[in-house]
Structure formats: C-alpha cells, structure tokens
Figure: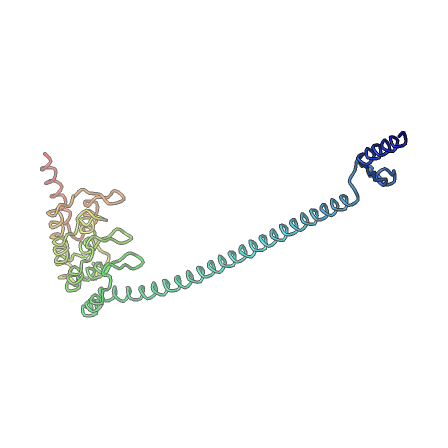
Length: 296
C-alpha cells in the first residue's frame, strides 16, 4: 500500500516536472568574446562612407569652381571680341566719314571753281553789254545775284556802262536792287557816280534806296578821275546829268547833309568839284538853304 502511494507520488511529481517550462540559454551570447562592445566613434565602414562622401563633395566643389572659372574666361573672351569688333567698326566708320568728307570737299571745290568761272563769265557779259549771252545764262536758272570776290553784282556791272537792256533783264528776274559790294557801293550809287541819268531813274522806280550803303548823293557830287578824257560836249553832257541826278535824289528823299562813313557831307565834295562844275556847288548850297527854310 505504501509502495502504491509512493508510486503515485512519484507519478504526480513527474507530471509536475513535465509541466515546468524549459528555458533555453544561448551560451554564445554569454561568451565575452562574442559580446558586441559599444563604441564611441564611427565604425570603419561609416568612416569609409564619410571619407568617400567628403571626397565626392570636394571633387564636386572643385569641378563647380573650375566650371565657373571656365565660364568667366569665356565671358571675358567674348566681351574682348565684342569690344575689338566695336572698335574696328568705329575705326571703319570714322575712316569712311573722312573719305566721304574728302570726297565732298573735292566736289565742293570743283563746284566753286566751276561757279567762279561761270560767275566771271556772267559778270563779263553784263559789263560788256553782251545781252544775248546774259539772257541765255539767265534762262538756265543762273543766280542773278552772284558776286565776285569784291562783291560786285551783275546789276552793278550792267549799270557801270549803262547797259539798259541787261539792267531790265536782271530787274525782270528779281535781282536785288539794293545789294552792295565790299565798299558799300550799290548799283544806284554807281549810276550816280558815272552820271547815268536814265539808269538812276529806272533804279529809283524799282525800289532803289537813297540811304542804302555809301550815300548815292555824295557819289553824285564827286568828281571822276577820267573826266579829262571826255570831249568838250561829252563833259558838258556829263555835268548836266550830274546836276539832274542830284535833284532826282533829293526829290526821292536824300538828305543833302547826310555824311559818309568818315563824316564828310555832299557839300565837301561839291567844293572839290567846283573848278569843273560850279553849278553842283551852287545847287547843293541851294538845297541846304531850302532844307533850313523847311525846318523853320
């Protein structure tokens, strides 16, 4: 009985032992040589990765710097080329302008020479009374107010010898009747000096001014150097026309006391002329007295 009880107790203990769980221990984990020790620094693998990353970053920076430097060099080279091209263009344009200016100056000089020849020829025709040549030249559109170096105009040249047909042709084409030369002489003063009475009357009728330039009245009172070459009849006619011209000028409004550029008046020249034509001096005195009477 007791044996039976012991057997049952052992069986129960065995059952209890069977029910106790089994704990499995990994011995390797407990072995010191297999235990992973913590480390403060990077591992060789991470260090290698970091070094590789740094090298790659440095290489990238160097490449970028090299690219920037190359781009900057290209830009500088491009600017240099553009600047050189611009300078070359400016030099070419300047050279072209100089060549054009030289060519234009040559053309102007040639035109001046041609114009000078044409002007001289036209003035000669007016002086010599070549009416046909003057009319043909005017018909081409030639400037009737051209001047020579001393300022003489075609009208002055025509008046000089009282070429009335030419004077009429010039007036018809709008010549400036009051133009004066370098001595301030006008066509009217020239006609007065040489006693061209008909020309004086024509010029006054066409608007010639009695107070323009050198006073025409003084020119009417002045002697001429070549009067001695006149015949007796020609001299007489000349002096009579002078007297009539003085009257024409005064009637047109000329001042008998108006001075010239150095302050000399008509009576001053009439005194010098009295030994050849005392009537001029007498006439001037008479006109001066008449003027005084009018003022009173």
